[in-house]
Length: 80
Image (cartoon, rainbow, N blue to C red; front, side, top):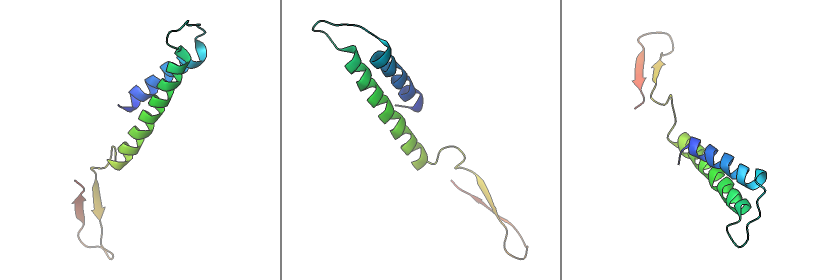
């Protein structure tokens, strides 16, 4: 699950949990479904951010230029 799907689940869950006033007789409680979607969406967003930082995200594959003290030649180090 990605970041966008987690945000979508949070939004749908919030709508079902807080904005819908429906009385169901013996069926599925929409407020409970909304709370479940909120929790699953929040976990999805949290896990997405944790794994995004562990995989380094954008900008990880960059060039770094090392200049030795006192000048001289530079060394370009590719981080791949």
